Every structure is written in C-alpha cells, then in structure tokens.
Amino acid sequence: MTTVTLHDLRKEFDDVVAVNGIDLEIVDGEFLVIVGPSGCGKSTTLRLLAGLEDATGGEIVMDGRDVTAVEPKDRNVAMVFQNYALYPHMTGRRNITFGMKSSGDFTDEAIDRRVGEAAETLDIADLLDRKPQAMSGGERQRVALGRAIVRDPDAFLMDEPLSNLDAKLRIQMRAELAQLHTSLGTTTVYVTHDQTEAMTLGERVVVMNDGRIMQVDEPQTLYDFPANRFVAEFIGDPAMNMLPVDIENGTAVHDAFAIPLPNADGGLRNGANGDGDVPIRDGRRAVLGVRPEDLYLATERPDASGETLAATVDVTEPLGDSLLLHCSIGESPCKIQAKPRSDIRPGDTVSIAYDPARLHCFDPESGDAFYHSESDASSESVAAAADQGR
Ligand SMILES: Nc1ncnc2c1ncn2[C@@H]1O[C@H](COP(=O)(O)OP(=O)(O)OP(=O)(O)O)[C@@H](O)[C@H]1O
Ligand SMILES: [Mg+2]
Image (cartoon, rainbow, N blue to C red; front, top):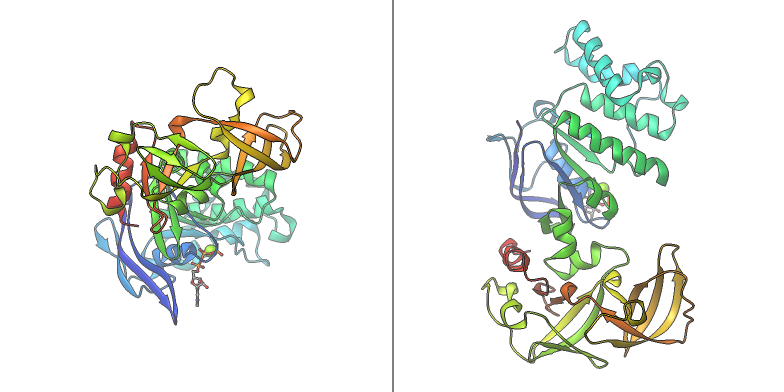
C-alpha cells in the first residue's frame, strides 16, 4: 500500500519558483493526474516525487516515511518518460532488465519470470529481441512501461508518456494504461498538459498553474464546479465563455442582457473569502461563466422557457457533430455550440437560450468562483474551493 503526502513542497531554480508550496494527499492505489499549461511545474513536482530533484522546502511522506532526502533508488518508484529513454543499442529485453540486473536484488529466474509476466500484460513478447529502432513509437512506449512494471514499484510516476504518439495511438494507449492500472492497482501519478487525457484517465485531477494547485477534484466535479476562473477556462473545449456583469437583485446584468440567477437567495455565496453562506452584495461586479455547450439557438428548443439573448454571428465553424458559432453579445465575444447542419451565416442575428442550471459567477479580481447555479453539490464545492485557498 502506498499513500503519498506532500506538505508545502517547494522548488526554486535560481530566480524561478517552479513549485510554490504544494499540499497534496495521494491515496493508495489511485490514478492521479496532474494537468496544467506548459511551465506550471508539473514535471518538477513529479521529479521531486521521484527524488530526481532536491526540494527547496517542504516534505514528501510515503507511507508514513519522510523520503524528502532519500535517494531515488531507495524510494521504490518507477518513472516513465515522454521520450521513453530506452538504450538504443540494447534489445527490448535488455532495456527492461537492465536496472534489475545491475541492482543485484533479483535472481536470474526471478527476472525471467517478471519479464514473462510483463510481456504478457503489455503484449510485447515479440518485441523482446528487437532493438528500439525496429519498434514503432507505441511499441517503444510499451517496452518503457515494461521496464517500469517489472520492478513492481510502490508507485508509477509518468511524465507525458503518450505525447510522442500520434492521435489515434494515443487514444489506444490511453485505454491500455487505464486497463493496466485496473489490473495492477498501483498508485500512479500521471502528468499531462492535455485536459482530455486528464479527464479520461484521472480518478482525481490536480489542476496546476504557476507552481500552485488551483483545484483537486474528480473530473466531472472540475467541469461542473470549477473553483476559479483558471480551472473553468482550462477544463472544457471550447473554453467557457466569460461575460462581465453586475449582480442586481439576484440577476446578472450585462450591457446586452439581464438573466436571473436561479437560487439566488440561497445559492449566492461569497466563497472567495471562506465565509460560506454570505449572500453577495448587490451591485457587485462579476464575471458570468457559461460553457458553449450550455448555450443553444432558441429555435433548437422551442419549448424551453426563460430569457433569450440576442447575438450576432461573426464566424461559423462546422465541427461535424456540432456547429460552433463565434458570436458577439453586445461587446462581449461568446462561443455557442449549436446543432450541426443549420444554415446560419456570419452577420446573422440569432436568439440564444441557455441552461439555467449551468451558470457560474467569478470574482473579477481574485477569479474565485462564488456562485454555481446548480444547487445540489454547489454548496459543498464552493466551500471546498474556498478552503483550498488556491
Ligand atoms: N533545471 C532547471 N533549471 C532552471 N529552471 C527550470 C529547470 N527545470 C524547470 N525549470 C523551470 O521551472 C518551471 C517549471 O518547469 P516544469 O518542467 O516543471 O514545467 P511543466 O509544467 O512540466 O511544463 P511542460 O508542460 O512544458 O513540460 C519552468 O519555468 C521551467 O523553466
Ligand atoms: Mg513537463
């Protein structure tokens, strides 16, 4: 069993703060994904876990043991890299067994048995006698995984292991990794900058920005209840629309529309300062967040009630399964995911309806979410977001 706890973990390189005080509890056997934009500190966090970097501050505890200053080889974790890091002059088998042989911890029989098991799990038996140059990218990545699993580590640490593969192979390997995790049950920390990979693979997802954790939650919770504007815009494609509004009498008032916020009395919260159920000030400024897929043409659902917004279509993008409309609502740009095959043209004025259960409000300065219109889970999520303190 392996739980990993990070306490106020920091890493500075000269004048760069790569990891800026991270607190995180990684549960035994979970598949945890760290996602965030380039340079946010994902790889550095993983390398700190592996012991490949020395922490500037804070501590790393594995199963109750402080390993912050422990050598990588004594941590019993296995790292899988983006570039596979296979030795080109060695066969698949030698690549897999190299670390085991040199450690002296394993008999030849034990090594053979483990390679056999790994080869079966990963379906790489016929790659064992080939050198990397005679393997495809996906095959190399499987051999690199084989090298990690033969060691039977306490945790896998994977840094963008699929990003050198083409799109199709990536989707296939993604499913294989998920299966592998189900069968081995080994605690896994997986780093990617790809939000789709994060959402599909992660049992929980850590969103990072600028060396800090923005939110840790299950994928659907991140999508439904983003704790702040960064997460709201990072998770989901196309990104959530952000419209500047004033809150007046529980209504979001924009230059071009006014829409009532459901559950405004009970649901409006000032989560940003951690006070929980504080009704927000009338007249305060806010950023109203609505996802493109939660907006639709009023003509698509004639029976829907509620307000509609007038929008001018600037650009149309047929995506096959939907029609993405780049619009202007007053002065604000806004994307709308409409049904495909409609004959809308740039320059048209359209009437837009929205899903009232999917509205979000963010503080214009701090970016913290203080309102989600869906009532059930929102209270917990907003309070939790405030507790995490960004
Ligand atoms: N060895 C180093 N020396 C100096 N700065 C470094 C070093 N390693 C990383 N950094 C800096 O630390 C920050 C975080 O880097 P890191 O590699 O962790 O980012 P990342 O989230 O993995 O990004 P990417 O998605 O591009 O891989 C960056 O600003 C990077 O330039
Ligand atoms: Mg990286």
